[in-house]
Image (spheres, one colour):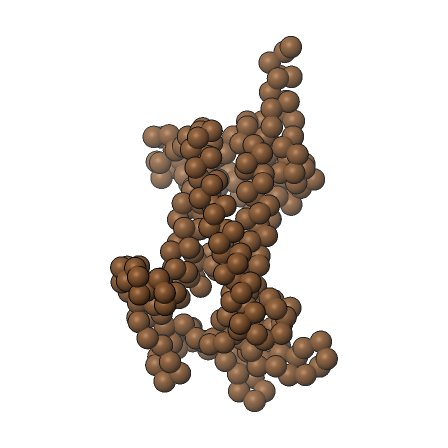
Length: 270
């Protein structure tokens, strides 16, 4: 059989990668939406160990009688109709930070939000641990994410970034090994952002604070851990939006089928 035919029948994404991808996508969606419900209980972020209404918050979502706003430091932006002050499906004005369509559950319930969040956090954490172990075992990390010496050069990174913003290069990238921007992105998400979400989540837990106080101290206090947790979630949402934009540009049907069946014609196995 010709070499090209053998390559064309190789899966672009291994089964473990595909299963983890979809479980991870579901978990992150539920964690984000239930996390916004928890944030609605106290829509302010602080640095340090403690935080209350009278303490200075570096970020806050709030509302007056008619105006919703987002405050970052001393900068204040009106967000009426979207954050802080919005109308529900029945036309009633609500003053939670995030609207019901963005939260789980869609009504305000801190207890239910925590139940959803903690349940899927354990699934997410276990899945990430198993994926890392399996990726080391089948050498997915070494083969597909390993950064060669020349790829660390700033000129190489800049050239890859410049090429990766062009539509023709994006369309062709689905049939090629990861470029340096993709490698750095996936390394940052898998080995920095996702573990950081787990560790900051643990640092906010009173039980973990009592048993493993070094976690809280590592982040400079429970409120600092909460701020880092929220900011990391924002970066993951940003990664998701960029990721989906790239998928839509680079033949989305083939990309989605590759992540479902593993088959996508010629290309390196992931």
